Length: 354
Image (cartoon, rainbow, N blue to C red; front, side, top):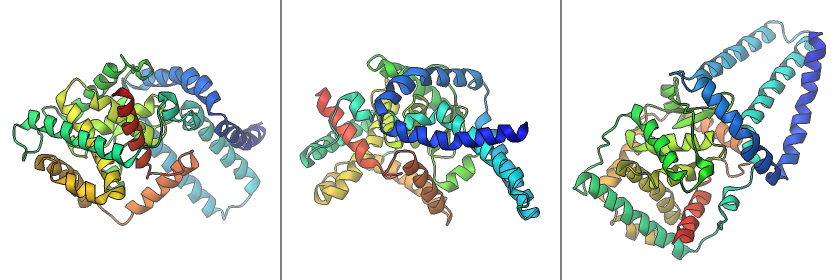
């Protein structure tokens, strides 16, 4: 009986691959029936079920799966992979269940309509538009920085703790939901990662567990970086699976936040993207603008850079390569390097609103 069940579950694996191939060519179906259909109910249910627990159940699940995989490999190697009929279908059945849950609970969002289509904005922009918008971001960032510090050379000192940032991030979504009802967020499930230290050495700010819908953030990172990180992970929870779209959600909610410190974190986060793109495409213009950025803002950027440099290790490129390939396998051909799309969303939304 058990073997028949394992065989049946194993046969579902190629069926799931076929379904993904179909969904990739039908994003309207995914958007209507899944992302705006059943997914919000799945997401809210999982957050209601696990969000009240102060630590991450998903982190324990990851640990259990890793330990289980190591044990399974040990037993297979110990027996020289004998009697493959006994373990192949069992392994494929387990993989089929995990893959099915991954997609049903969250992963199908990778194949929804692109965000620019939903927002009805373009994905291209002129060099002049990029330059003008980057200048606008510098002006707004400088204004907020001076409002908070009264001194253009000082770093902004955030008046809340890392453990209070999640409340601020949720408040940002509540605020923006007045204009974008689809960004309504309820049943919070945002937690510090139990693996924050190894996560730091891997080079990551946070992640969403797709099996539990818990958003985890790296509590080691500088406070300046945390508002965009937590807002990014909430974006994932709301069904924006692609990294570039979740980054845009982080910009949207922080830049429009009622709290000036959160707006400062948001504008400087957006500025980092746009200035980086300007530096690649119009280096002379970028160099000219650099002097207009308050030294205190540059100190905040420097703090983040030094933080990551101090935790640099030889394995980090491997983790980034692995994650980049994971993104490419899930309908993100640019992998981690998808900054240009975020810039396009920012520039064109600004054009639409002005």
